[in-house]
Each structure stands twice: as C-alpha cells, then as structure tokens.
Length: 96
Image (cartoon, rainbow, N blue to C red; front, side, top):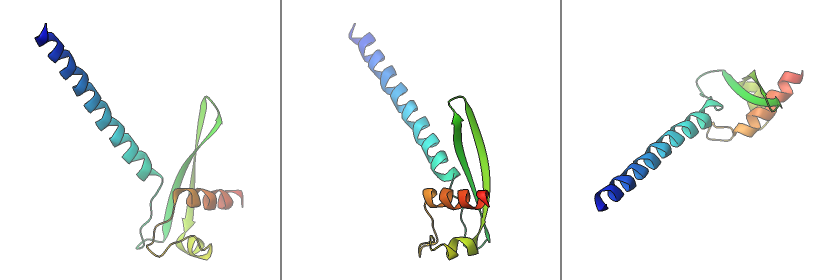
C-alpha cells in the first residue's frame, strides 16, 4: 500500500514538473515573439494578435522604422521598447 502511494505521489509530482516546464517554455516564446528589436538594424517587426470575435484570430504585421520609434519618444536609453508601445505605434502606422 505504501509503495503504491509513493508511486502515485511521484507520478503526480512528475506530471506537475513537466506541466511547469511546458508552461515556462510557452510563456518564454510568447514574451519574445512580439518583441523584436536590434539597434544594428533599421526595422522593427511587430506581430500582434487581435480577436475579432471569440472564434477568429487575426494576425497583423507592422513594420516600423527605427526613426519613427525615435521620433515618437518611445525608445528608452537601453534600446528596448515595451510590447504595448510597439502595438500602439503599429496600430497608428496601420491606420495611415
């Protein structure tokens, strides 16, 4: 009985561990997928996902030049820009 209980506990802990690893990998991928910026290149590509309704995902791509980012005073000193600022800038450019 004790052996079965310890095996069950070990299985549950292993499942939780695997789930956590998968969750971390997905979160890392998502957090990096919308932020692409390199000070050596002149383009920033932003992919943002919008829900038109609950069943449809629409993917829109925006390209912003480095000059546009600097002109909007959205570029911090360390050459990184927040995801929400990129989305906002992309939406403004998309509407032009």
